[in-house]
Amino acid sequence: MPERAAPQGPIVTESVIIGAGPCGLFQVFELGLLGIKAHLIDTLKAPGGQCTELYPDKPIYDIPALPVCGAQELVDRLIAQIRPFSAELHLGEEVSEVRRIGDGRRFAVVTSQGTSFDAGAVIIAGGVGSFQPRRLLAEGAEALEGRAVHYKVRRAEDLYGRRLLILGGGDSALDWTMSLAGRAGSLTLVHRRAEYRGAPASVARVRELAAGGQIGLHEGVVQRLEVDGERLVGADLKLADGSVTRIECEQVLAFFGLHPKLGPIASWGLGIDRKAIRVDTEKFQSSEPGIFAVGDINTYPGKKKLILSGFHEAALAAFGVQAWLYPDKKQFLQYTTTSPIMQKRLGVS
Image 1 (cartoon, rainbow, N blue to C red):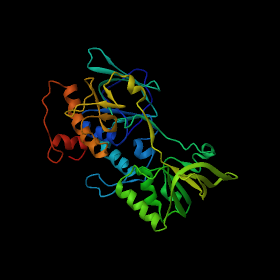
Image 2: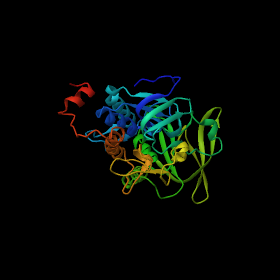
Image 3: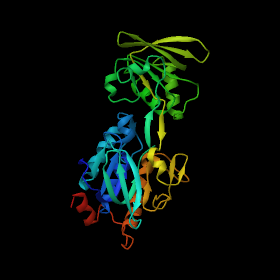
Image 4: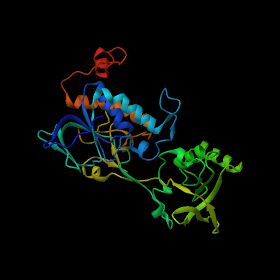
């Protein structure tokens, strides 16, 4: 997808998608099938959202027709899928302003870099909004960030054979513990309490690994990281019983979750419920006509925060966008297998 420098005047477009994670990327596809052009904006420097930024190697098992798919692999496949639609991508830019213009059926969208749009519709696919990982606050951790303290795994292979300390009790911590057990030189998982937030099957598997001596498992917190020169060599843990023990380690993976922040979205006059945008379930439109929301950023009765659900939302939102942009145009449901128009748009006719 092409990137472009900000022009002097606003970019006139049918739609703007805010957020280039999996749901935002798939939204390009669904709009493209209906012949609707889109510009895609994201605060991150690369498309993919959390999949790329936090866990590119994490396996995903619930994408239809793909028994297993890496998170970055999924992003790469989505990018290839939307290539026929030539959506223009604006990376490293945060949308700072969304407001109605003219007769109220178009929107001015402005980014932190000064890029401005005159858009017919806005689709927010911002995941959890602006996010930063919750950091390890132990003594010595800040100086080691990026070298020996990490909040995401970029290349799992770089961790093979190393002495690893994994922190956290959610799915990311459990998934990486299971994935790296047997590949790391040694591996210890530490969580502050006995109860875990991750999937029960994952918790059971991690306990099996600990019982079999394949990993260490502790209930406690890291107090201090020990450095020899510039190398991390160990960590002092304060255990639940108050005692302190030392763990040898070379790399720390801290998975404490994210600080979800709506950022500027909170000031756009949308209906918000617990830091999520309320939408209908017919077209996933927000309380503001012409502004839609898909993926983890939205909420409605029965909402499930799954990529799979976000794909469904994007499909219905595309029809909602079409009806908003062209209210006098009759809508037809066409199938990619039989529609010459859709096949032409996909470049397969």
